[in-house]
Image (cartoon, rainbow, N blue to C red; front, side, top):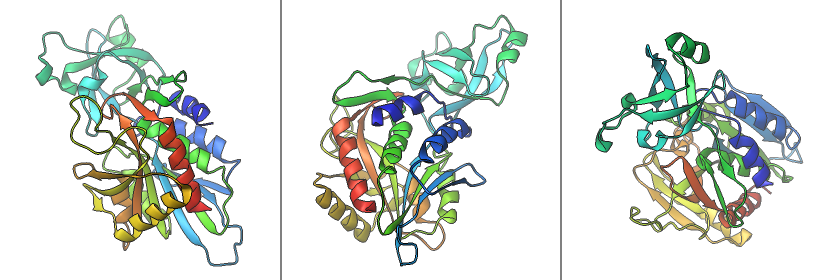
Length: 331
């Protein structure tokens, strides 16, 4: 079923700041598995499964995945009808060059490219432009407007037996996995799934969501780069070697108590774990951890190749293993 979820979500754009369409698709799908669905003012989507015995004390576990994918916004439309853009959040403009893009508001498709005679090291978003094949500025303004969000046209390859290969797996794969896990009946725990917005601009959605939920444990789902490709930064993470338990990142150090509990869940599920150490990466985990008086929080990550590119690869075995771990945690 993960394949079906990925196909569905990849075909719905969710640029940072305009995640509504993907959230609505998830809402429509998740209603059949949960007891309650609602949004907050920022646009985070909450799907709640109540404990079977509502009259007894029960633990509340929050599992979170972010909705948004890399995006840019239109800042100008020149006289020739080309769109000028600026990136939203920290990202590499080179990864956009030559790709098909979609204007979120109108659905118009174009190509993003870089100005001629620009040296590779000098490429910034200010040197990129979108070509909608507009005749002139007036025509371009009928197809897009300043302030519109832009995202890649999604791609997902269903032909591989052992891996998932697609656009922005870092957003669609955790969401698809969480949808699949929500199909599992719960027993004595309350489970709240949070699909957060604006992850790529300092985890704004997670910061708001942290104040909306009362939880005994919050887990964020994400991806982590592998160190098994040519010239990769040194890392012990390998594709297909199991999901990773976050030890620390640039926003938090996970407590021993949370890590021990996650290790115990891996053991019960019969799954081998890896350890993620990412001191330069900020995450939603840290945003949840620091809300209110602080909440026990941890992160579970799927190894992915080409993490900084628009197309990524994840192992199906790792996804299935993480599914089993999450089921062990919530049952």
